[in-house]
Image (cartoon, rainbow, N blue to C red; front, top):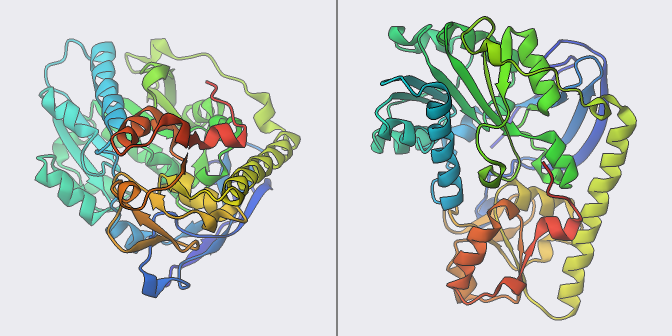
Length: 416
């Protein structure tokens, strides 16, 4: 399948042309575009360049990959994970108890709603929910679960497609790992103003935290699917420029946040919640080009550490599998010189049978493969789910000392 790529020359957020390339990863695939044996060698690949805007300091890509066909059959879901479900339930309960404890029935819209997993706890609490989802597959899954969903890409014209009673009346607008995928994030913020209740509407956003990406040495989280990479400071300042006040970065406890989650709550300026506006957060290192040069070196040191670790196990005659066929697994292995030497990749919810990781030729299987074709060691790329992985693999006869968290090998740090 041919996929078009278009290039920009100005910042996605402030339109500045004062851009500086901080990272470049050659010939990277779409991490979730798994292939059959007969299609190997024809996968999409394109250089993945990452830039810093030296005016608004948002890190971003400057190319747009046409993902419309890609997302039509997008099947990624975390609904199988108890860790993720606990997080989603906690998010919903915390929002309601903290901001809407006296409200009986709220209007909740999620853009990028997937199979409806995040909307489900709101529905179970009696609130009116609506999903907006690009994937035909995921939207149908949500509808089957009783979550009303509009199947379409969200853009500035999408507001006119919403039920009229929602315009200016949405109490909670959610985007979970979707806002940082949008080619035009500012258009989304402008459209959100038309949807949110101006008196008390809340915009709840979850993105990958670039501070954590660097601290944990996770270059695999730079993807063609992502457009921007935020930290607390750049998220806060971008929202402020568009007429929002950021009021919360601590909606749920750290202990249950997902591995790389930056979760923040904002409200329209002059809403009843604006009194809780947070003071400006300054992170000066993220404005310094030299800081990014050091991060690049650290990334490649982490990749080298993985290569050495894997090579040592192979020289010892051990069979090694990888756990996690998401971006941390696929793209990290692609960056390694010897990544294709693992036996196979395991995923708790693989997207089909007879599939291979793109640009790697590594087969992808469900959990049962670990019992059918045992290995000696497992590198766990989705380290945020490590406790869950340990329990799942214990049932299959694997002990914790056979499981190695990627972050422990690369030398990354779990910090908040």
